[in-house]
Length: 234
Ligand code: SAM
Image 1 (cartoon, rainbow, N blue to C red):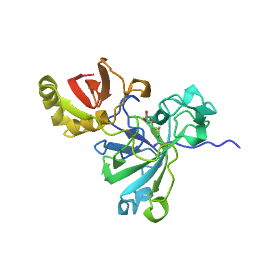
Image 2 (cartoon, helix red, strand yellow):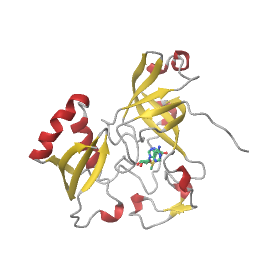
Image 3 (cartoon, rainbow, N blue to C red):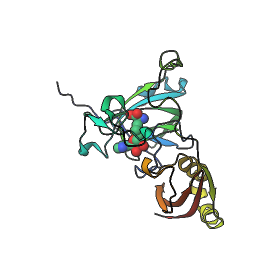
Image 4 (spheres, helix red, strand yellow):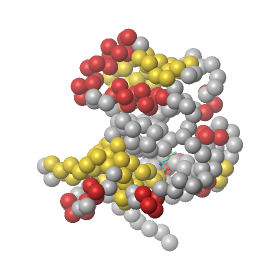
């Protein structure tokens, strides 16, 4: 059977590129996003009662990688990027059907000038991600404290300790007007150590860059420290 499914809405998030997006939702609490509903789903009736829930499940399309196909086995970063496991034993973006599933915080519903949106938090979604379903998170059924986590039993590696150089601190200030959460976002995103698995645990003199909102954040890592070197217009 083949199915056709519709985009219900589009995510507007600070993550403008895949690099440095956390591997799962909930890891970067300050990553706020908006889910803008599209016609014909942009009618208030579809959201009636949703604000009673603190969290939502979002089904989405890995739209940026869907053209790259899939393989029966993948090398998850959690296994150091060397060991292969079956695609269905992972949350890899490269899947036969490029569908993702994330549980996110619901902060409210917004409505203005004919537009309807959900305010979300702790997302792991690229800006522009198409959402194909929305369901409430139901703690009694969805929270399973005794579940086994396979090769990902707990949260990823301990967070890095992020600091800003005086120059980066100065460059940050004007951005805070438009994005008051930017300092927290940069700190939380970089604390996750966004580098590829093969770079971790070794000396690293590279300067990295990541785009968050409309700025480019330059940083370097000498474990367990991460230093923000510059924040520039993208
Ligand atoms: N929580 C989801 C799941 O389990 O299905 C996603 C897990 S996947 C390992 C998380 C990664 O998906 C992020 O680090 C980001 O690089 C990538 N990602 C997020 N949105 C995407 C999109 N629209 N297209 C392609 N990749 C995306």
